[in-house]
Length: 422
Image (cartoon, rainbow, N blue to C red; front, side, top):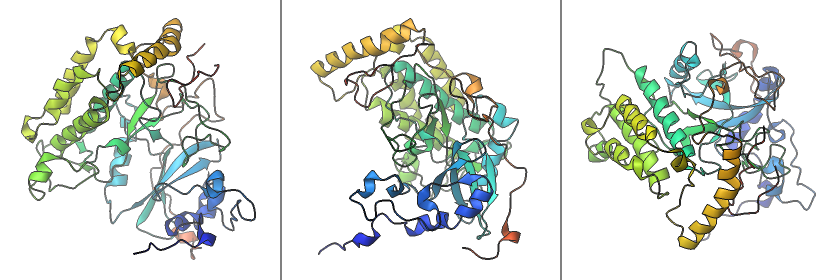
């Protein structure tokens, strides 16, 4: 059976879900957020009448996830993400997000929940709220290069989930897409929100610094399935809600049997480390015993996040500087490739990092918190302050009636490629 053909005249045009954002362009602009040209009313594709291909044009880049759009905060040119949340589908997301990202919790450096900068009430649909957050990047892009970089990720991810659990919130959807990175330190000029390997202006490819030269912070995102429990309820039981990771043993055994979501969170985190690190790299064996405990089939046999953090702290304290600076060794690579990569890594990563006194384990300073009022040197913005979350939801429903130091060189995608000058 032949597949339906897309009308060439409609290729690259706005999808139905992108039209949602176009119809709110002017309203968002009045509130200080500018969308890309593609989403402006009356937009004409730049490739029309030319020999340009759609994918070579900035305005040909469709949203990867139509529930979230990028924007520029006009007061300081900061790039942000705006997420559409339907309260009928996710009734607790905004409430929990506000709880976790409002002082005093937002001031705690152990808090790794993505900050809510502002919550807007949708101008046309009463059940929809628009949450403004910093624009983040996938946590493993660019790939980790050293053991120390991976160890610091484990520390922040474990610490962030421990913080949530300490405040009686279960995430319930820990997976690769829901842990992200503030990439400003390694990409000070940011990146294109859709074509993330391109520069912000779509004119070239990004050339990020290494995490060791410029430490980054990681954030837990997407609280759509999260729940907050009473402190008097130490062992809450919930009917399973399947998130992105479908491998949870207790869910597979009986998808209708209530389970403790905090124990499930521990499995989610352990499985992420297992699949994204231990199954990819040879030299992270020191994490295997802890991860094995975290992913046990019996939920009650798994450690709590307090126990995970304590055991991890003991493990990390025994790692030498030499071990932390070591290159992550891919399981797929043979002896010759490993030799070439090790020579390259030593010459263009290890030696420059040692000479510039970069710590073997790149821990970011607390001043890099997205909620702090600090400009990021040496690339300050006009206003480095994150806009505080409103105490009440901004609602325009009543006014709208019709919709309408020397540093190590930048990281390259190909680790063995020729190194560009700094």
